[in-house]
Image (tube, rainbow, N blue to C red; front, side, top):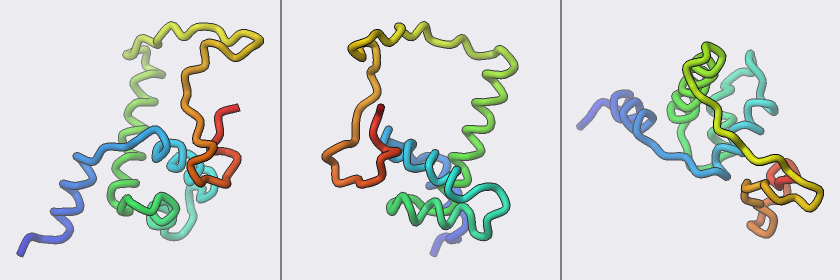
Length: 107
C-alpha cells in the first residue's frame, strides 16, 4: 500500500483547477485568513472536491506566480478596456449554477 502522504503530495502537484474552483479558492483565502486554525482544510471543505494538500500546494503556486509577476518576469496580457456595455469582460458568470454566494458572480 502506498504512503498516503506521498499519494496526497503527488495528487496536489498534478491536480487541475477550473475557473469556478479558483474563484472559490480566492474567497476561501479571504474567509480563512493566515493564522486560521486548519486553514487549508477549511478552504478545501468549502471547495468540496480538493484536499487540504491540494489547496496548500495551489497557494504555494500562487505565491510563486505573484513573485514572478512582481519581479517583472511575466509579461502581462494586453486586456481590452471594459466599455459602458461590458464588452471586453471575458470572465464567465456562475449565476444559475446553484451558487448563492454573490462573490461568485462577475460584476
